[in-house]
Structures are given as structure tokens and as C-alpha cells.
Image (tube, rainbow, N blue to C red):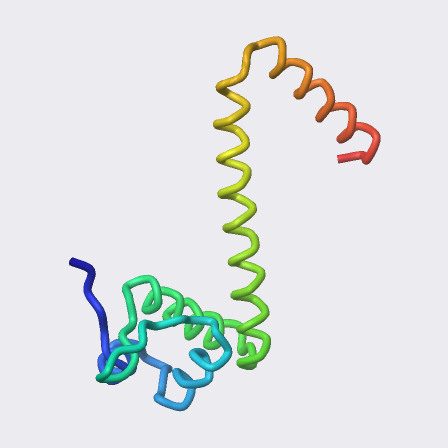
Length: 115
């Protein structure tokens, strides 16, 4: 069973995170904890995202609104990477002739664009 952390536990675990900042990140939907009768329950993924937010804030002195934008960009990049992996797997299941035509087409597009 997955471990869940309370707001109090998350604030205690992560240096640089206080209750007000945690509430801001929840309100901004940077993390989406489970809502329970006892309050929010944070997953390991939530804690990792919050750690990254604290690290970015500390090392790059980013304000909270910029942190939200950076996390959105990271999420978009991760989604694109997942889509690319799925596309590569789908392409790998196609016959060599189809793969060759697609790769030639991709190469032609990249040449035209100068990639």
C-alpha cells in the first residue's frame, strides 16, 4: 500500500516548506493531494514535487508564481516524453517498409526546418 503523508509530516520532512507555502502550492494545483476527512494526504510523488519546488526556490531564488510555471513546463515535457516513447513503440511494431517511409518523411521535415 502506498504511503501518504499529512500536511504536518510534509512540512516537517521538507526544509524550506512552511504551511502557508504548502497551501499555496495546493491552491495553485502544483500538487494535488488526496482530500480525506482528516485533511490532505500527500503521496510520495507529491513530496518529491514539493522537494523539487523547494530546491528550485533555494538554488535559483524563483518566486512562487515562477515555480508554478516551471513545474507546468516540466509536466508538459514529461507528457511529451511519454507520448514520444509510445510513438516509438507503435512505430517499432510496424513493418520495416512503413518504418522506413516514416523515418524518411521525418528526415525530410527536419531538413526543411533546419533541425
